Image (tube, rainbow, N blue to C red; front, side, top):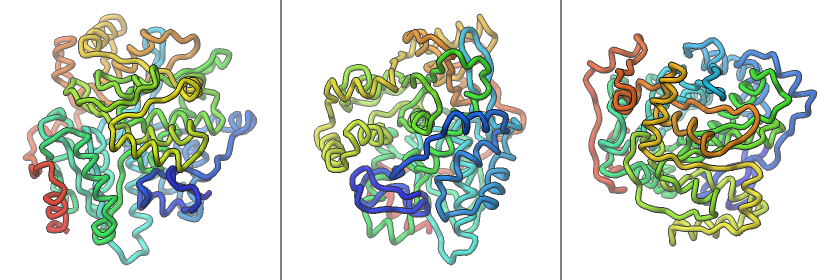
Length: 459
């Protein structure tokens, strides 16, 4: 399989380029040049597979010559052996809809599903290479912990995690900052998540710096994450036995990566009806999908911090499709967004988006009420992000099998749970120790030169 950039479709890239570089030199995002579409017969053959075996089927066609089938099988088995559920995820009925629990990995968030795989991909790649890689990643709370757990202690690789200072929950922070591995560096940036993400993008754009540290990234723009996340859409589809009704997914999302993975699954032939983009009050994606207004506003701090984002990086991949795979047009659109802070989607293109995507915005009061109502009615505790996904189906009435993606364990947001149902959301026993561990992180200004200097000194 060959890959191209959303901003330049002339050059072909291998999976190795796409995985290691993460972001194209022209600033665009990598996408496959073409996709294999599964037939109904193919889908029938996947129906009874265990999660890991299904992942092998879905992921292998994207690998090119990066890894052979046997080694990929071993990597996937190793990656998913650390999950608390044998089949990685769990689908439960909660009221009139399903909740797909994606938080049974080491750091209690959906990010683990892809990140464990990426960590083992790096180890596989470096096993016979005489080189070192430095990963630089921005996090709004969950990505950092998942990336650290996947990379910690591995040879010839360092990881630098940038999180917004005092803007993630204490549990999210402690899952990142209580380890002692020498290849892990935590940095609290005086700013919000978009500031952290912009610093990482600027470092990728600086070819001299990027090359000098052999930089790589594991944010949701990394295509390997999108592919890995597409698997649980397939798996949950096969768990629902009544196929006579359409299937819809509600996805709490800030950076558009997790819901784009569902869109990828649909493009590969999975019969998904609608993907609901569920946002908090930082609602740029809702405004774009419902009204065509992709306008950057000030980020509000909320009880769903992983979604406190304005610039949704992965949205560029959808814009490329909407603009009829016109790389020049896509590059112009992204330039306008960067310089003017907005992009207005015309009616025809918006109708094209709404074939696959709908959206809903859920405010703070509604999040608290949803957590309480679901607990009172069904004795299930939702984290604030999952509550947003759950509530989105109350706002958008869709017939069929409605599946909410549960993106994080409620214990990661104890204040929100306490406020909603007056209960303490406790960590799983095997992770309780982190609350008493000493933290290790550095606080740095939102300054590109300072962060570059910090990284160069540490490596």
